[in-house]
Image (cartoon, rainbow, N blue to C red; front, side, top):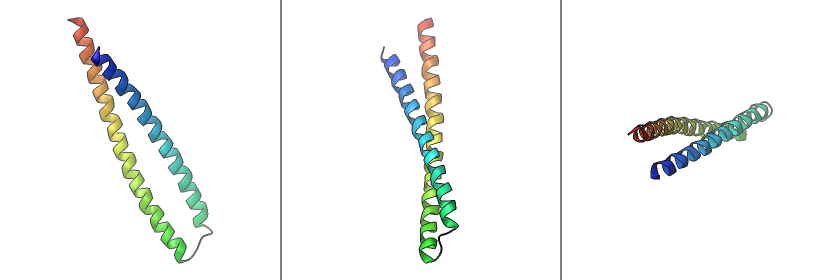
Length: 92
């Protein structure tokens, strides 16, 4: 019973993580598109400072997305392991 609750909880978490990462990717793409448009008309020292800050934040976001993808893969592996364990347990 506890395994079933754990499995259901992990599956819900995996779904929430997947939605979160998809939302994050979509919003980041929107921001990048807006920055490309702004960069075409924004000039001067302020533009350079903003550009550097945006690129830095973008790099951190890419790292966050990479770590999120790693967590998603690990979580899916653990869910599959738990399912296999449950299946083996019911065969006994």
